Length: 312
Length: 228
Image (cartoon, rainbow over all chains, first blue to last red; front, side, top):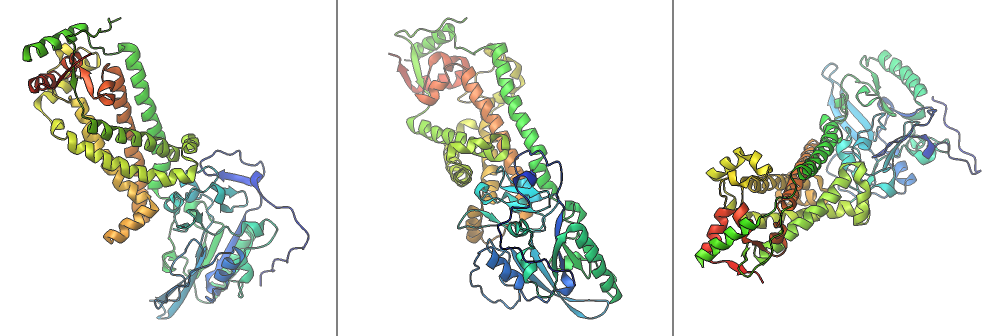
């Protein structure tokens, strides 16, 4: 068992991280802090998950969100997708393992992965609407969000959702408010099987190694850690029994990266676009300086008068 | 310095645009400028402070697509109105081949042109293509508009398609703005042009110098106003 995180004191406590620990800020340049805080991570051990949805409930409860009553269409997923209120979702997959003939029930807790290189933050046009703290948490700042949905296009995991009532983007905050006072996320606290553990990322990797050894000893030879390097690693990691096939788990991307289209949109198109507009304007100024105005001459007017006189 | 032309009793003014054409153009011009300001503010953080003109980032995000619809409808009006005069002709190629003389204002070497020269036709057709592209990709970037379009036509736009829409929308917008800069500059450089946009008339001399074929036709039709 992973040592549980102690309950906090009832005394007011100072926040353990804040504005000074921001390493990335959307549509802004920041001076990174001299010292980086210990990177944190949430480790989700898919093999230990029993699909009880306590994490989903805890998430709604802690963040004071309310989900609409849905419709049963014959699957366990409830709601059917992530929503502006449900920032985490159990996704259930039934998979027949061709090697063993076993029917495996793969349950993955979906939600923000808190990428080291966040696509949402790269795409965001509103200064300070998305920030990344030096402990790895990627957080949306509601006051600065304009509800444009660019983060949805930037995200390689299809996580952010736009509230059509509030016109703001929402996703898992990794319970930044709880982490700030030394607690783990609400989902982790609620998990009855320790399928979710939280702590320093290095410790989480070590804990995952133990779990992977155990899974391998039980015949899951491809068990492994999901910490995708394409996005610089993530601060939410999975232990998968079939780490060679992440897509089995409700289309978890095998090798997620920020889409090259997004990189072009937020990279070259911005610089080339600004350059083209600047050069066009400059060409106008230079032309005017060299040529001066193109005036109608007195002769032109006389010619026109003559033409008009001849006609009328 | 060129001597300013003094109005005399014989001076003629020729009608170039009707009142409705001018109103139509003003709708397009104003909405284009508003779209340019709001669009640039979301395109590059350098311009983000421009959102203040619209009451902040959220209202800018909300207004931009609606102004876009006004522009698209307004431009369609201009397109249908001026389509017949913007069809390509053989003189357009001669005019383009002598672009050097256009830029140095050596109008004597240029062929007589009708209501629009090849440069103006280029603006007309390129803006038609770009505004059409901006409309289509813009709906793809507009969560509410997209949801409406999807339910209306029964399709689903994927996130990858939305990414392409974003890239194409910003690229097309940059081109449209660059062409708009040329359009505005030409109107300033070629003196006597702004009157066509504001009052609807130009001097006979302006017609003689820049659109002689058009002037001849207008004079044949008798659409001449004496200056006062």
